[in-house]
Image (cartoon, rainbow, N blue to C red; front, top):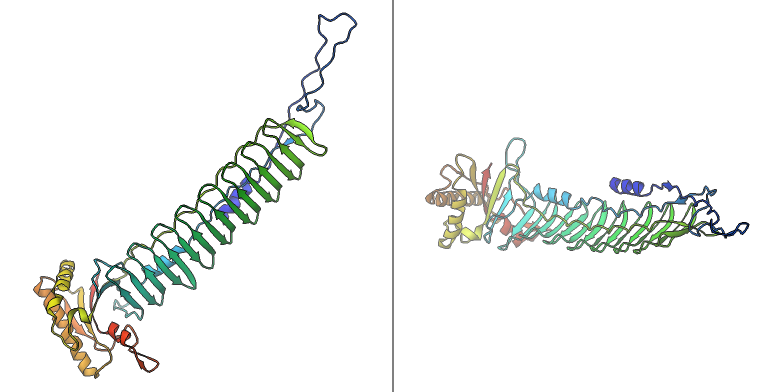
Amino acid sequence: MRNARVWLAVASVMAAAGCGRAPPAVDGDASSPPGVATAQPGPSPVDARADDAAQVPEFPAIPLIVVPEIVGVTPAQRALEASMQPILDPIAGVSVAPARCGTDGALLIDAGITSVDAQGRLVRNGDEGLFAINADGSGTANVDGGLVSVEADGSGTINGDEAIVRVEADGAGTYNGRAGLITLDGKGAGSWNGESGLVVNDGDGSGTWNGPLGLVEIKADGSGTWNGPQGLVTNNGDGTGTVGTPAREVKMPPLAKVPPAGRFPPLKTFAPPGAPCGYLITLNDRVLFDFDRSDIRADAAQVLDTLAAALGGVQGAGMEVRGHTDSKGSDDYNQSLSERRAEAVVAALRERGAAQEASARGYGEAQPVAPNDIAGQDNPGGRQLNRRVEIFVRT
């Protein structure tokens, strides 16, 4: 907004230029007979008279169309970074998210619901907002009442408190916000309706400005008109023009072409966020176990091989394997089942050379990440999210 006003202020300065004086009168021809007066040429119709102190006003420049800084993606990106990290070699039923810790260093349990499919598409609904992010960085975010939608090619929309913006991949788009209404075609043409009037850029060197200095029109051939404080000024584009009423012909250099309008910068896609205090690998219980069992299934070997390779460099007590259940069954039974499952995962990872000093701990049904029931009705989807094994890796 501030940049836009500066451009308009600079473009609106009007300087007056001095006009040329008429040439001196021509004496009679020496070959003419004595006493015979020769005709004296009058002043050129495009010259100002020597005693005419009027000045030829200089056309004001048509302001450049300045695109304000678009910050709509940044808050959404920051909110995403506060709650998620990208999926690393996604496996169906396995997700990786940043771990958030309190001031005492303890892991905070996030009540948000996160899911990641095999294609790396992440869906999250938490305190920071609602996100649906694809592996290529495209997606949508609904944060603080504002909606951001970004495509992988940089096109997208922002609907927020500051502005409503639509950007195309070729730089075309619209902006409607505090700086006014801006429309660009991505090829040099556009318009700007703001505090300093209406600016129209045709993209071919011509344009108009209807603002505080009056109505200015510049054509691509160097001609134009200005109807402002000086009255009507016309530039013919051939080195001549007229000033005032009645029109007086004067010398006037052709007008410079209007520079083409710019383009909207592409919107930034959602970048991979980092983790505040480590990361949390979550495994759906069906990836590793049969229902109500703690023996790891034979077909879980590939998942465990992948995890062991990824976790091979983690040393010391920086890793905790955490078992969780839903609320079906008694507290004591769920506690025991969660402990046995956590211990089984630690044993399987150690067999593969990882997690040698990791700890195993069961939390039973005490730390749900989704409701087990809603309004007194069973919620199978929520219970499925709660039946999980987590590997907390502190960094």
